Length: 275
Image (cartoon, rainbow, N blue to C red):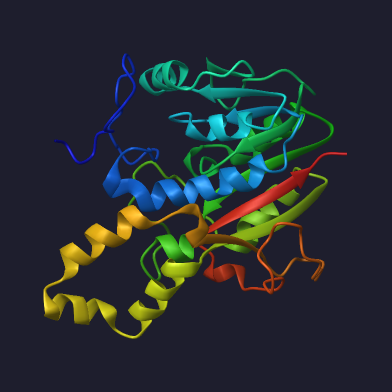
């Protein structure tokens, strides 16, 4: 069995293989990254009830399916032909459809209440042009949810970016906030952090757990149990220090976390509004 290929796919649905460009469900070794991305989709899914949603660069389609559980309609847009075909065959709901297209051009002006654009802005050559297009397809009063990894927690210390060959630019909190504010009327920046058992694991690493599990020779059995057990509840979205120094807590964001340091976040989620 190839550990980097999806397992247990429905009949007639071709499995996808990990390439580093996108995350996938049904790959046990990928569960940490899948749950990390899924946690953000679930957060957004709770906020799109009855709305028209477009999920740009939707990848395998699992996030579009989550959004379709409450939205009036969801359009998943994916450029890669194999990934698009997989999504189209696997995820079927009356209010969900998939189309092949490029994030720079897909979608009609003012035709969606919500644009979801997760973990992709770091892949594009002209992020400002892409965000301007995202804004253009939002209806008045619409909201775009845009996420990206934090270069400070993804790349080695002092490095300009990680070694992911698909990433062209990785952002610090201030850079990402400024990018979004240059296009949208209002921006709220949230950070995704470890919670529950992943927070305990994080603290253990700070206390030297890496050396302990290596010395005890329990590395493989420990992580063989930990990684598959990770769930979306092991991540939490928290508000950070905003440029306007606002400390109001957004409903659904973890309590007691209104002013965390976004520099320590795993990923950033910008909630961007159009008047």
